[in-house]
Image (cartoon, rainbow, N blue to C red; front, side, top):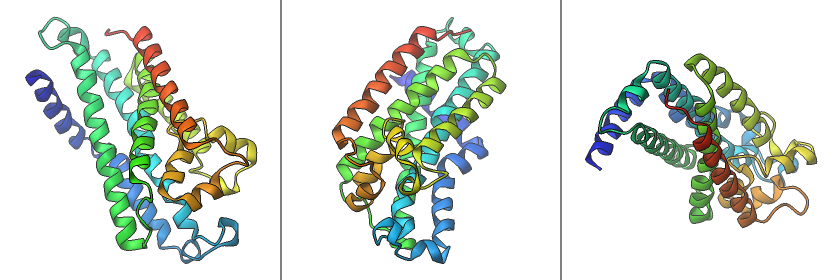
Length: 254
């Protein structure tokens, strides 16, 4: 346990030195939401969003930016760098098993997205008057399970790529795909029915996050007869377990 704590401290220091990840993974979701909130049209009630402000409906999407970036871009790139430089291989000859490095990475990554989410929710409430989540426990469940699914996908990427450059390229493709189906590039309320339905099954489960944050926003963004909240959570959990199993099967230390 003491060795793991030391690794967490080391990985935390390395994470904080990576200014690009701190800015885009932790601070960018809040900055993006505040920036969009400064646009007057987004702060006016709209018939297309059932009388809600567009910024209220879109707010949960901002959470997804940091979650996806850290899970599918940052972690695979770091692990690929460790493999590429032989760090994992050298650790395997010491009492500190390479698996401890992976666990430390996940702990730091999870802590970073929790900080990002807390900062965004607090400032969205204080600055933009976006109400805090109506169902905080459901939001916490959707957040944790959805992020676990993302981590599973990120670990598959980390398992198969050989270099940090390849990890960055694959991470970018995954980021764009997940954000597209999640509704980051086109509001879910305006997406075709087929794309919205697909988005209900794509990690991190933005529809579950949205409905936990606001029942009204959840109704607007859901498909006709959309999937129940707990079914979406079960789907995300299944993806997390399956992806983690595949990653463990494919993973190579060197």
